Length: 415
Image (cartoon, rainbow, N blue to C red; front, side, top):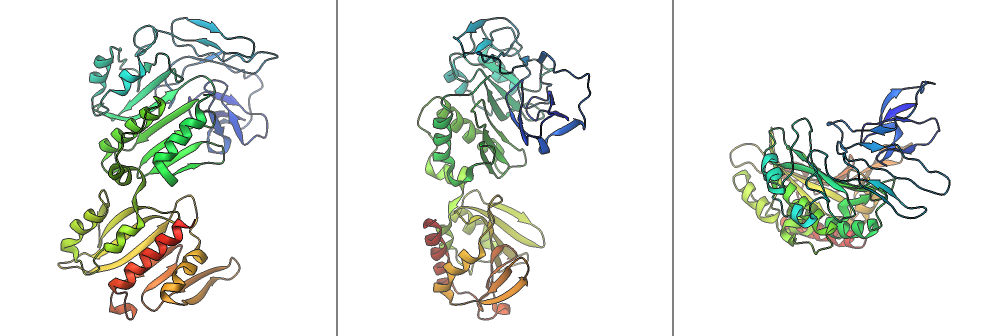
């Protein structure tokens, strides 16, 4: 089988049955079933190119990479960035070719990382290139900046379509990074439970169209923010600040309010203070006061998405009737995208508050059940739901709502 590397775009011959294959050029760990197939059967005449330059559309910087493989006694890792500068570090060492001359690389030896970190990501591509003294090649999608004296050889900056501001940064080096564990620990300390390790050992963070990843060997760490994300430029600025503080070994300067609003979500307990009598006219100010940065979507109902920092729930959706003086209709507590919500844990948590619910078997073969209390609270369709109003029986009063939120917060803190 011949497939395309998801990071640098190189063709890779995978004749084994391995599910994960490392790119022999950039070192990226490719999940074969998630890559683009170039040929179902590798042509007999195919040979890996001696070098590969990622196209401008690839995630990897557009710098020439040499084919690398393990040989008897010596591990040779080569990264060619235009000009020649060679260093050989002992047997089992690293052969690295790097230096000035590649477009956008900057002066000989690269640029001091602290100087690059000081760049305002809200600046345009032309402004950043001028500030750092690098040449911006219009044929390259990204602006590549070589780093001087750092574990990462370069950082490539991605920009919006009009190149008015940064939307992502990819840090790259040509082999495993010794500080990988410390980098992962520092990132997790700020990103909290939204940082997770996937099946391949990569550290992943995905929240509201903001993404960050650290490969299992640390050779690549990157973040990207979609233009469709809420507050995209602020989100870029926060992730830029976070990543640079970690890579420079400095304390994070992100305050707790910003961390909650942009990176992790609010503690679930803040919703205990939501006044259930708030109508649509006061919904915006009420939700914003409790959970700054919440998303608003208008349709047949008006919905607010509140990101929460909780082991069971990723966000809470609050719906108001879209009419003058519209009332609060429903609250839906959604589980995490990568971890299924455990309905039995939710029911066990709420029994002391509401008593035993009515149980309905929805799929006997798969053991699926829905649970409903007479006050409009139910665990159904993979989410915890609260329906407000007299049409669901007695309805949930303010005190019961607060008790439910505090119970869920307490259960979550227990694991």
